[in-house]
Length: 221
Length: 142
Image (cartoon, each protein chain N blue to C red):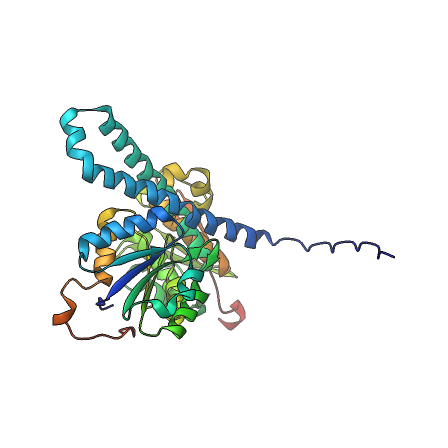
């Protein structure tokens, strides 16, 4: 006599974060592969037939330029997704870091006196990269204040962010076409890394706000 | 990374277009070195013993949907004299470190331009004739 068929086990819920990560990787890797083929094939055609096409002023040259332009644009947008994917997978070495370590080389302005010894729980290298992305290599004025849970940095507003407000990752997600390859892309990746550490970032009229989780309670002040 | 002096080059890529592009670029930068193409790591592992000594294997990171890191470990165990360089359409610093830990000589992201490919492969394959260069084994330089 046949055994009754057993019911298949109900699968557990799929972790949305894992799914997003897998999708980001698939998009950034799997789609880039055929895109590379298009870009490189276009270049090979240009190298081997470009002179002939230019001499004939043919529509083939227009088509070739269009192919290469489209491939470059797609590459730029895929790169933005790759940057975000890497920010999600990048190992973070969180440590109790004094603000002095993070803000060295910049002009620190605070109404609460010297906050250089205050500790935040972040990956100092990742935070320095964020500050460098916004401020560049020249010393910049950075306003610092403390709340119960965070050290709040206010970085100067770059002209490139003039018409972007709020969370940079939201802006990037709404328009890859507009923001891929710009400072918004870098700040989108910064948002991913900061939120993994319990911090936040937002673009406001006054500047770029960066919330770093404090590694000390007010009771210890 | 020091460029290597391979006796032969094997491009392992399931995307035949990428493999052919790599072959075209390799022919232009290292015209004296024979270049062969293979579409799967299983075929390479099956024929590992037949690879010429000091072969450079350019292996795609994902072959037929599977990561190639395990194949690198197997190939290097079977043929420690070959250099394996992992190529990928998307490669993070973490991926690169893992590939090297698996035995890859180097791991690199596939560039988006022909000049990028020439520069990348030119940094892997030495341009000067092997006869005048010192012998180098496939151990990674620091």
